[in-house]
Structures are given as C-alpha cells and as structure tokens.
Image (cartoon, rainbow, N blue to C red; front, side, top):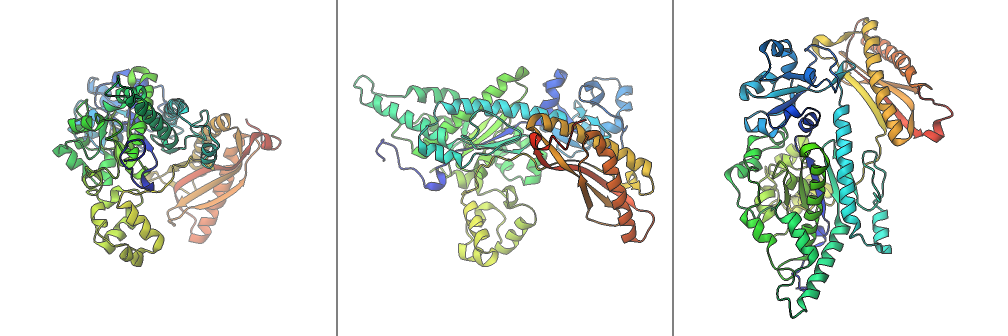
Length: 563
C-alpha cells in the first residue's frame, strides 16, 4: 500500500492515460446525417465507379446518389445499376450483420443483404468528392476536442511543472482547434480516428478523488466513504466501459480477436454479434464496484478517470448532432497501441479499458492471441520478416523470443521495439499533427480509361477538372489556416514506367491561372517521357496536381492573389 491507502502501481510504462476515439461506420453516418431515410436500415457507401454513368452527383443530390434502394422501382434501380456495382468503402453495422464487407462489389452485397441501400460517394470534377466527409470529420472532432478540453480544464494543474510539461507537446493542428490546445496532446490519426493524451487531468482527478475519499474515511459518521467526484465518475463511466480481460468473453468475441488486420478493416459480423449487449458484463461491474481507495492501484484509478473523460466526450458528440447520428467507440489504456486495440473490442458506441498489468491477465487474454499483422508497425513485409526470423505468428509467441536473439536479427533499436511491443509497452507519444505541407488532387486512369499522350483535348479536360478541385480546397484552406501556396507541382505516370515523373514551378498569382500552368508542366513531362521511351505514343495512367510550400497570407499577399 502507498501513503493514501492504495495498492502499489505499475512501472513508468503505465503512467500515461491515452484515449483512442474511433467514429463508428463514419462514411455511412455522414450520409445518414443528410438523408434521414437511411437511418435504421442496412447501408453501404460505394466508391465512384469509373465504368459507371460518369456523371457528377453532388453532395446535396441524395436521391441521385442513392444508386440502389430496395423500395424503389426496378426501372429506376436498373438505370443506376452500373453505379450500384461499385466497390463498398463503408458498411453499416446492420449490413455487416448480414455479412456485407468493405470491398464487396455492389451486386454481391445485395445478394447477401437484399434490403441493402447503396449510396455512392459524391462525384465532382469527374472523380470522387470527399468534401462531405472531411467537413463532417472536422465538425465532430471539434465538438469532441472542445468537450474533453472543457472537462479536463477542471482538473488541470497550473503549476510551473505542469506548464513546462505541456509546453513541450504544444503544436498547431490544422483540423482541430480549441482553447488551450497545448495542454492536451491530440493527434488526428485519420478522418475518423483520434488519440488524446489525458494524463495530466486524469492524474489530478485521481488525486482529488483520493483526497476526498481519505477525508471521508476520518469521519465517524461515514463508514463507507465515497468521494462526490467518484460517484459522478461511476455514473458516467461504469455503465458503458467494459474492462478488457475481466469480462466473460463469448465465442464470437474470441473469434473476432483472431481476425487479421485486413479482415478487421473490411468489417466482420463477429464484431456486431459481440457488441449486441447494451450493458457491461458482471466482471466489469465488479471491477468498478471495488472499495475506494483500498482495492485500487493508482494506475487503475487514473485509467478510470480517463474512461470518465472518454464517456463525457462521447456523450457530448451523441447529443450535439441530430438524433445521435454520430457515435464513437473508445479505448482507454496507458499507450497508443493498447488504446487502439481497446477501441475495437466493443463496437459500435461502446468503450473498453485495458490495464496492461491487470492481474486478471488482460495482455494474455486480449493482446497475446493477436496475429502480428494486427499490431501497428508489424504489418506488411516487416511483419512477414519478423515471423520468418522468429517463428512467431502471434504477439504472445513473440514474447518467447529472447532480446539477444532479436538484437542479432534486427539490430538494437528494432529489437527493443519488438521486445517491448510484445509486452504491451509502447512509448510512442501522442503527437499533434501539423498542417499538411501540400494539398494534392489526382486521378488514376486504369485500363481502357488511360489517355493517349497525343489526345491533348482529354489531357486539358482532366487538368481543368483537377485544378478546379484543387482551387476549391485551396480556398477552404486559405480561409481556415490563413496561408497560401507558392509552388505548383504536377506528376505524370505513363505506361512505360512504374514511377511518376514530377515537375514544379512558381504558383500563379491567381488561382484561376493554375490550369494553364499545370497543363504546360504536364505537356513537358509527356514529351520528356516520349524521348526516354523512344516512341511518339504513350498511355497516361495517372495525373496529380499539387500546391505546396505554403506561407502565411501576410507574408505572401504582395506576390500572390486569390481569384
């Protein structure tokens, strides 16, 4: 026991509190927000089909983008059948329960789930337009960040030590802006997931709970002291937080844990089956109902405070948007790797806490059975190399490989990474991302869609489409981040090469001059490619146009003007 009557805590590897938030079926919920008829029914979002109707379908044209609807006339579905057979990029949990997965073709998905509604992503400038999803992500992340910061502000210490600690993590984030963003490191990992380091408020919250509980224990009139703050925490977190490694696990849960990364990414009915219960299991309830402070370690209490902050943030997002259309799953642990694992264990709209050193064996139960490829940093060729050299196929098997053997096979730095990660230790910091250094728009021309290098009219058309999209995104970026690009670059891929050739020049003073500048660069690259290939005809397989080398608007206003 320590001086506060708590059990001893774990090592320094367990002192952080990290939350991983993952928006549930995000592309589907974006569509449901603007089209309420899609709520409560099986839905899949399909990619733009380059062999389909090839017509623009704008964000607000929801009926036009609903390329398959079981309640609609067969004639109308037939007219859009080509678009309906695109590849599924997002699948609702109702559709997953019927066996529909990401990357399924539309017709295959309909056979699995006859009641499936298929929505095509918006199409603009002859290609997929992701503006709807980018904007929705920004709105949800802003609400999430504001709520968790507001809660945290009640517990953040303002001592010079805290100021020094948080100052080192300060950074500017282009996607999420909120007060005191230097206090809580927040890392947007993708359009629908984010990490937040809540160590500082969680520790202070835990300290206050202990202080209140200890004060109550000295009162003769209170034989079962319980902090007011602790009561509030239990009300918010205990009913929605499963404790990983403690709960009674179903056959579906065990099978879902064995899925590889690709199967998990595509979505599985196993995840849906294991998330049907509304309340946490008895094992988790017992974990929360232990006596405070005598039955708790400091690490456990800090993680519980992290679960409280996660629950409050998730609840705020649910309330903020119409009908609770956006929900999040969350994972709480002492590092990014375990927090991400935890967020995927109970979906949708649930959260899980994993304590690395839990005596119930959370690592052995949840982490060690995972295929190596499920762990970030152990996928692809490197993961295959690790499996070949060590003979380990799961994380647990990797723990049996000695450190000297790892060093001899992979070198000192990589060996220590592998040794630590197998034991659930991840020292990677939650790092706020800076604004993107470039903004790019590209188009791939596969098979019969490839462009003959002599077809300058088609090349100019697509240059114009890509530049129109780029101009829209640059205008939005200028409004949000108060900066302008000083350089324009193009990349061209042809049938005679595997890599792209690139060229850049000074950005035009006006955005509407981008198309001419880009077209001139593209023609130069095509001619150079012809000379290298010693042919007069090449097939253009891909074009990318990007703006880069941004400067503050004040610094660049004298040389660059917006259209």
